Image (tube, rainbow, N blue to C red; front, side, top):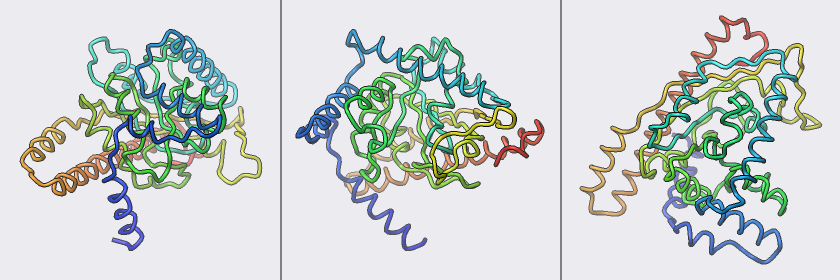
Length: 319
């Protein structure tokens, strides 16, 4: 193992062993400025059940308007929009008998992947916050003032702080939403990646799977076409789709079942007396979970490459 990887794991372990509860994390938020108070207000609102009279109509307006705009962006700005096996996601979301939360994971090609990718969803889902995703977004990029705090909070985007570990407030909020059987979308690479190889996945999503009250339905997804439209390090960071050549491609994979792994983990954990031993076991299981996710995404990438080649899309996409 490389020295920097050893150092990263040591820092992660130190950070992960700090485990304040959600209420403690809210109480620790500063309240000195108007922005501080606004951020703390919306973070606490996201932590609570969304049952206030005004939340649903305002969230519906934000989610529906943005995703409808993204649908127009896809169909007017791109030459082709191709989705493979989207029903594997929509069937789960619309299953009236579903009693488990849903976690979708995807590669991360650009800062606009979310919300653009949800423009492919049917309209009957886009205007209902209860059937739309919650997701994690970088606090320093999104939650910059009271207006954007309200917009992204109502847009079901949970502010995450890079480097704060897997026991930060964002993960606590995500676990609350999973406890309500809601849908959470995660870009587990943790940052935009425009290379041809998936990055190592972050451990936070592993904790979400492990500590969810009911084992989530985990669905991998792969998107392609956004790096050509919004490449990194361009002088003006604006999307530049070409309606005569740009292609957006999304493929949904088969669900990953963690039921057996989590059952074995809980049984083994009950037999351990030392907290250090439990921490080591938890870490090993988190790694096993994200490794299976990585394998699933990598397989989906290979399947997508073959499907894109058969459809004649490869000359226009980096696969």
